[in-house]
Amino acid sequence: MKDVIESCGVPHPEVNWIFVEGAPADFSHVLRQDAAVDVYPVGMTTAASAAHALQHEHANRFVADGHLGKLTRSLRLLGFDTAYHNEWDDARLLDIMQTEQRALLTRDRRLLMHSIVQDGYCPRSDQPLEQTIEVIRRFHLADEFKPFTRCLHCNGQLHPVDKAAIVDQLEPLTRIHYDEFRMCADCRQIFWRGSHFAKLTALVERLRGDANKGTSSSRPTY
Image (cartoon, rainbow, N blue to C red):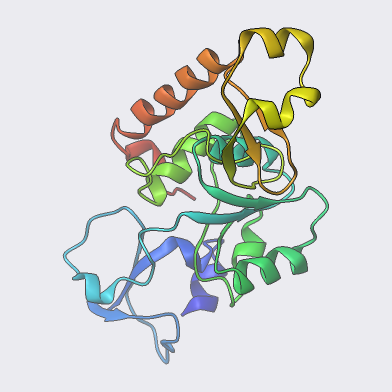
């Protein structure tokens, strides 16, 4: 069944229910004769019980392909653990996905069709903010935002740091006007609530509001 569905261009991670002649089926089902097959995406309501769902509704750790750098930055801004490097090839992405148990984000539908992919999503929009909203809706993340807790550059976690410990790394005006700082545990980048902070806060609230507005635009289409 997996091969039949994917031959139509639909990656299996985006199929949540399969019915063959009205009976629930999974991806291993073998069609031995002509049959009526109904396929439903994640997010669409059916009469089927959760026991027959083929996908996890929720994930909050991701690996994104090299074309989704701006989506990655937005997810990290919201506090979601998102692995990314613009030079990782498909094999590397799949390895990280599997060994670190992450959901795969990619606009390459062929990549999503690899049999080892369990959780994954193909953003429909080519606009980073719309992509972010799609991911939030797909994996039900609107209530899990933890903004300003991850490094936008390397994905490391941010921790408070005493000003005295980093004062020699600060520009003169930053030393004068700011007293609260955070440091990335991995790359040691320093962050503070500078002039850009209000814009980032507004962006977080916009994403939260848009993600909570209904989900019809995030339903998969092919």
